[in-house]
Image (cartoon, rainbow, N blue to C red; front, side, top):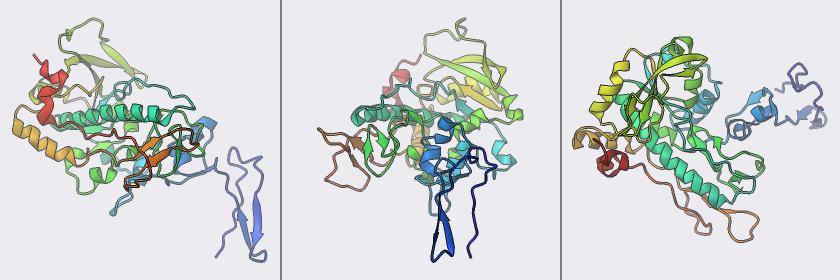
Length: 360
């Protein structure tokens, strides 16, 4: 059965769009070419964010070009929709409880804007540095969220190169060379979502990064902010603002030292137990582990699987070749590649970290 389709001229942007249609099968079937601007695939919408650059509302969004689906459920598609604010199937329980987040600014390293002709090797090195920062941030937030009986709100995620199994140039997928780097990338670009969802313990429960920017009123009105400052800096330092602005209103702020142990996290942060959303200025150096080796080992075992590095997928321009070479996780020996992704350091080694070895 065939259903006729004509572009709706009432949809903004379609009014003057030319009709591109043709007949086939002796004139019995009418086919049309759908304009990509309004019928977007997973790359143009979730990665290139073409709708934001053109200031339009697409007619249809297709969650292709993603890497998070599992055998039990299309986790990647759902996560993409949640991140974009398009998923409407979560119930009241999704916003129930208490949450822990890191500020938008503290979630990433300082941004380094790439040029349109950046060498992929340069962009990839920035990508590796950002990945190390992100994994340590997420690991610390998972630990502190567990200690404080809160649900983690994932931090903002930046990518300095695209993520694709095909050829790249200047860190970008073919046909998307106008993309700005870095860009806010989907979670499935940097983590294996199945490891967070399939048979995962409750300690790995989380919300998407954009959840922090779309809080319902009851959460928005119950917030607190904590400046995480270096050891040696006074917690009462007058240069630290006593309040920050969030959602158009002032949120009270206090301070805590970096390099906290589990008992210190409870000492400094559990006083906010009646606050629904607790936001830290940064988390990458905030946590130095539990107070006993056995507890550190337990947590390392808990997060080792979901926090493992993403598959080996690298990019490299060589000589005067027009197209860069790349390597996917399948070992293609004919392709050159750059190594740099690392698994996150485990808490059992925290005593060697600068922020932990200098604890008072």
